[in-house]
Image (tube, rainbow over all chains, first blue to last red; front, top):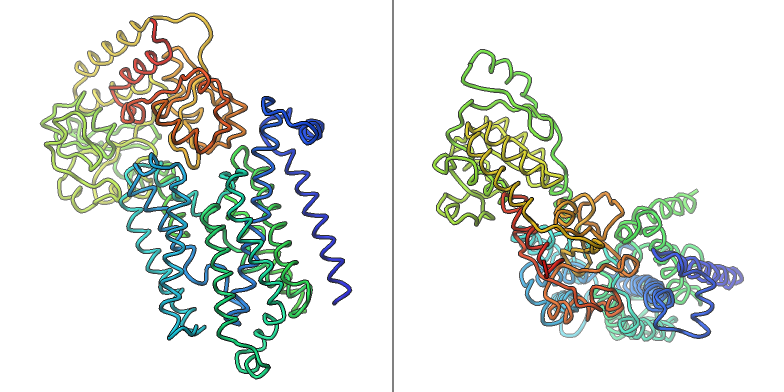
Length: 334
Length: 301
């Protein structure tokens, strides 16, 4: 296993770079080709529309796909380790439902709010994500101690309630446009990408990744189960809190910008452990890289199938990811 | 999320299935001469009383159509979205989305009019089952609205009224000053995050043509209001952008997507708001809508 890890890591890295290169060529403006890209990298000319498209639109979008996919996969990995449950995902704490509700509130109930700031949708969903996360943590903890089973149930319950509230708001929608905006947001989109917006997710993902790297031993011990981990001298309570905060911070940062992209955070950690083993040293880094590469591939596929704006990338992640995952599952079982 | 999706799917499903009992209905029509069988714009056969005395619409634009043609005493209700003409507000309100079947059936309409896309095929079939005929209209071009008005006139026994109205609307359309020179490529957006625009296969394409311009969206997409990327809009580089006042879009749309400040419409400040109802409703007021667009594109004529 240990010899396979660097090889797989290298392979995925090459795939990611290849996809980046393909992605730079995918778009509506034909003149934005590789030769132009080479020029733009050497001497960027802001007045040249092809340069602008390559550097200001295509590149940030590809990087956002890498960051969002990587962040969600990492968050899922941390959540699964924290509650020691393979069904855990980044939205364990109702983050996705909270973010969706926030997005619905601002787009359907407060359509005038967009005049205050054009970023009202990300702001609303960030507020919803944070609110739902804090609520679930509040229910799922007692005297500062996280209780995994209670946390899981609280997450499911709160998510159902928030979804119902969302349904109520949908029924109040006055125009088709409001509904279309809310629905398209609910499946996730990378179209909002821009350099200024990349910093937020970049910071949370880098912090989360470093933290996970520092805690990688703790993560492996925690997966042995609470009692054995405690017997091995691990401060289970504190480790759980750290993981929870890191994971929910990453999730909220990504969801606010891209919507609740499904599947990546649930499956990529499983694929990682399947390929590298449960306690591999490179697991955390590989998981993030694979998640980013996977989402990048899905975004390219979505835009290639359905130009110009592409299908909602969240549909692609599930449509193409699940069969692949089932294949891995069956292969592992055989 | 799943819930949202199924909901939207339901909304967007075009109504094209035939009512299950239409074959039987035409037989009874032969027996009772007081009823006639007509074919609506979707090719559905609908059997209705030959002189309907109780009619209503399931779309705001259709309510405007009815008030323009029908004897307003025969219009028995309006939907929650209907607010024009003012007389419509005095009619009892019925929910069209979700369809309030009980109230509608309780009102015993002779026929319910609606337009493609506003009422789902399933809802129409249910109403038919409950004994309420549903008649669909579909408009691809402005001319289709005139034809729709004449069809309503025939069904409601108000041919003269409909003829007079369409004649005067046609004259009004013809009286718009003709414009020479290039036709401004106009992009009309309906939403900014994500960016949705009036597609090629919407009535807007014909309206903007009659107003002396052209829809900047030349490609046809499956959806009437396709989502667009910023790159695609940069490529279109529209001469005119419709969707809000310049100042308003400058602080929302163009602040969110500063790259788009390069498009010609922004550079020449040809960014305009339009009346949302006029823009969205295919009604007898369509000529007002064309005239509004004409004025924006050619302020000097």
